[in-house]
Image (cartoon, rainbow, N blue to C red):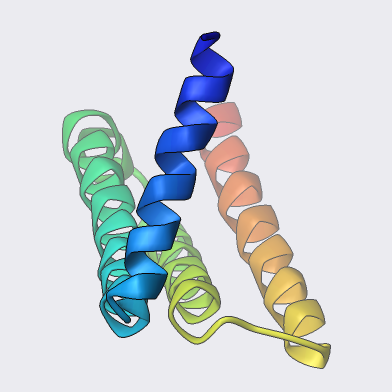
Length: 118
């Protein structure tokens, strides 16, 4: 038996067990918990990256530039969190993409301006 067929059979058995045992609610709960855990892990990785690399560099920037940069990052985190937790649809997708693009533009522009000065 090929590994592909074996893995499909295992997946079918798990899906059948979930349906027969009426565990759809538990599956939805587990998926929601995984969604939150994934968002938290991304935040922790971003924090470690900032702590190890960005913080010392950003401390040398002027106050206005550092505040603009941190505000753009904070708004981007809220935007991504809204996307992950609520699940945007329709016009909200366009709003989330526009806000995310503006945040990225402001953050990258501020970072590049500070690197050209230094």
